[in-house]
Image 1 (spheres, one colour):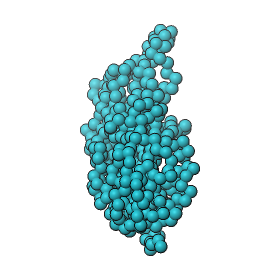
Image 2 (cartoon, one colour):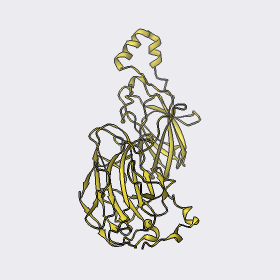
Image 3 (cartoon, one colour):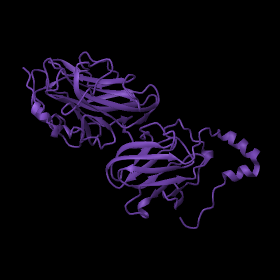
Image 4 (cartoon, one colour):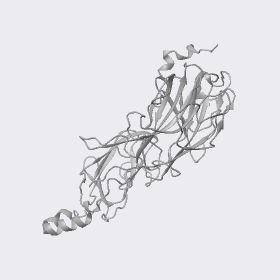
Length: 401
């Protein structure tokens, strides 16, 4: 007979079922983050300094289902990562650890999928791994679950049996129903990208058949070719939503770490407005050097007051001790003809005064879709004569910045 824990889902507890909502990643149900070991989940491998988790405890009804499967799943939790860019041949990897207090015929499960950024559902998802409660033998890939497309290391994983101690399981921590409860330990998932684009990972964990004896999963952040997303100019965060058709703004969501640059990359333009909608202030900015633009850029405040001229980086704390909520970058030469399909076309590095979730926009001042190739520009300049030359002339440098 199953042991039901109805006393643990009082309305007061349900109110805190989404503690991860303030993070940049998107959570449905019960998600969280940690930076220290916790029972069955040890410190993460692979250079990760923290890990995320999802749990069916206080999960949401209908969450963490897979299209065409899991009709008997009851409640669960799922998380979508921030968007990231990847090219053909890039290797997307992370580590995960499936933890379950359930067993017997109540086969809870967890999974990870690769989605096109902004996808409304998982109908076109690539299943990277699955894990599922099973009395004996390997539980990864999961029994009767969709095929796995990633390379898993180790490739065959038996359960480390016994009631797992892990705080995200709530009152099920340390508990065990029948044979099959336990945890997997850290497993590496690696997938080679076959089509360039912007992607997200969807992580899920669900109860099966009932909502008693909970399960969950710990997992590290996303790495592309061994580098965590957003941590370098070659691996920037991508917009978390398509460009706004009215304002033309690109929106980014991520979690800032004090004094650590976060790199973001939209389409190209002659300038951008950077505006923090929520989160800590910007303390400095690092801009790329692009061919065709060799004399730097102009930095303005949001009130259009010139702060610096002809620079490739700027420390806002030199003028504003607490940083700024936003700024404008102007004077990117059109002759640079930046490729809007290149995810490394104009990558901006931003540092923040404090850690925490950040939602910000980067809005083109003058979009340059349809800018001709450099050779065509030369032809146009010759045809326009002095007028064309005037369009390309830089404004005079002021005596002081």
